[in-house]
Length: 256
Image (cartoon, rainbow, N blue to C red; front, side, top):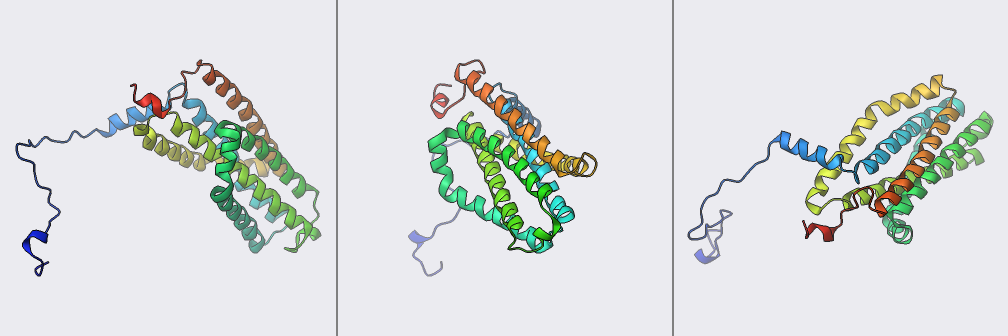
């Protein structure tokens, strides 16, 4: 900078406009932020969506915890086979999010995609349980066996349904608040998901060990998903007719 002419030398210190007054920035307290977040979460058109996401997250976490244990103990999957199953599911979710999520949302809408994700996920949970319970040990020892391929396919489908559900619900919740509150609602969702991850895996392992095996986990998951489909359908009908306070859109922000 010493070789530059004086007029080209700049500093990061902002210049104060003539006559400008130094006004202290107002900072909100932590308690005020918490109250604001609670206010957002308890709104009549927000909390049902958060409830669906939390309860659905519990079901997903229980299933994702119990499935590897069921495959390892019931079909003696080795670590490489379990890794392939999880990698295939993650790869499919990434590809779906990059290529097919937007067309699916455009075709079905966020509400329709969320309901479809719930219903399809419940079906795939039961399908995976059927594959696990009806397969013999000798059929699952090879990574090229039909049982292994069916498990991979069903796990991919289950993961895609979960991803479609979670993304659609996030779209609905962020679209139901003004832009200035979207950071708060996203932070709240992540916090609730972290809380779900504390106890849902324990519940899944208890159901697996003492509740009747993987079939119990799958049936509980399917029952939760079917119930949430009905609840989400009722909520969307109520919101559409204005009984739940309506859904906030970007256009409403200018009229506040």
